[in-house]
Image (cartoon, rainbow, N blue to C red; front, side):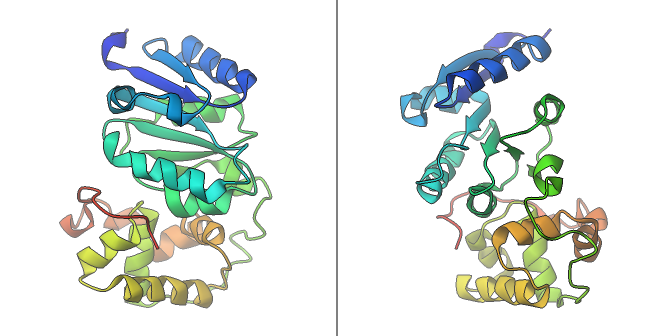
Length: 240
């Protein structure tokens, strides 16, 4: 068993039942974590955040201030370089969560996520990748499936932008890497969405994670082959 000294876990939820339930899952399946429970992120000391290896946050009750809540957590990412983030999101909050919170070491989970999905997300937390749970992608929340997506082919520039978005990069990072303005990168993203008949960021991330999106963006061969796709330090403002 790993020492708890280096495995600090934080659970944030306004709902006591969820705090206890998630805590019980970790205690049974991941006893190496020393857990701390909070009802809001404001209660968490900065040092606790910095030392945490796992931060589980329930955003399902934040519909009224969804964007503000997501922006608040986005601003904390640079302080928590060693942490894996798991966010429970509701149907109405999913689009803004996909837009603002997707980055390496982030997983979005449904607020009705099966226990097995939570366990898998924590178990795979050592992987430096972003992830959206299959429950979110297949729960019927989104009208698109692989058969209903447009078969339109993207331009090379559009594929580059979407590939990096799929890896968790923000608009500012992509603009810096590709030596383009934020406005140009945003325009290429929007052009790709129009070409694919996608209406929202949630639809975009659903397409990126679909078999059609993975194939067209060539994730299977782009990973690890080109150093240009390696993510630099996150020193950017909120994505556009």
